Amino acid sequence: MFHIASKEIHLARHAYIAVEGVIGVGKTTLARLLCRDLNAEPLLEVFEENPFLSNFYSDRARYAFQTQIFFLLSRYRQQYNVIPQALERTLLISDYTFTKDSLFAHLNLSGDELTVYEKLHSALAEKIPKPDLLVYLRADLDTLMARIAARDRPYERSMERSYIENLRLAYEGFVVAYSECPVLAIDTEDLNIVQDLQALASVRERIRAALQDGTFQQTLPQMAVTLGEREHTTLSDLQPLTERIDETHTRDMLDQFLALMQTVGDLSSAVSNADDQETLTDVLYACQDRLARLAHTVGVDL
Image (cartoon, rainbow, N blue to C red; front, side, top):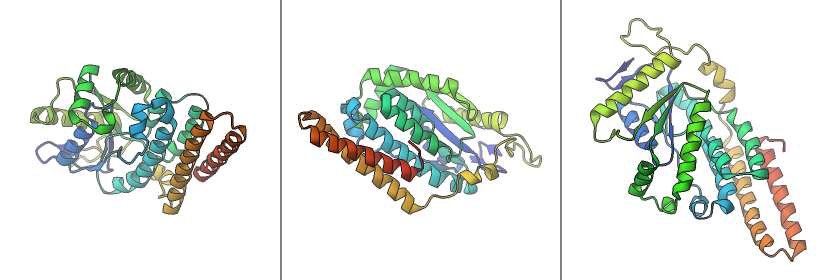
């Protein structure tokens, strides 16, 4: 039951809502407010753990692959470990989807790097439960840049307008093609959900209606408004895909990735001194070996 007065959602099966949109659009703010008002559990992305992020914004071409692969593995670990267990307890609201990782990769990678990324993403995405509703937030470029400047994160200070605009357009295409669950698009240009309680209540009601009409059917007549079981994919269907991964395997995966990134750093130095062909050859072989080890650890056949 979705009830504004009690600020709770009661479900025969707990729902999973993901909030998406461009950097600076207000995903995390909305997710936190909804969790507070609906007694939901949050799943918030952690950017600060990525050691390559700051360098990426100052030199995207050089650090795109390292940044993207680290995000891919980090997002996989977080969502694989958190989502199935959370949905057994309560409504879950996340400020990102696993699928969007591919959007950034296609914007920042190309050639062999993109090919390697796609193989890893395809193998990992099969193990991640899909949302029941995607809430997509929109805003104009000037508004996005103003919001990014206002929050003043150190690693975002060198962001270029062109990059955010390309990302905004990529998100629009992403949402048009998105088919994993129903999408609720919300224009945030003149929406102040922090200071305007009516605006937040309106968003809550739109989410309730979208869940009821798009994903769930009414099945419990004793409740005034009920969001019942889905007609198709259920938790039992997802269970084989969501068994908890072993912590040792996760550590091995991240260790192999960090070792690969260290070797890529060595390759950068070797390329700058291309006259030393012997060293360059050795480092290339080392990169190949590290990549093969990482692929084996995550179960990808390169």
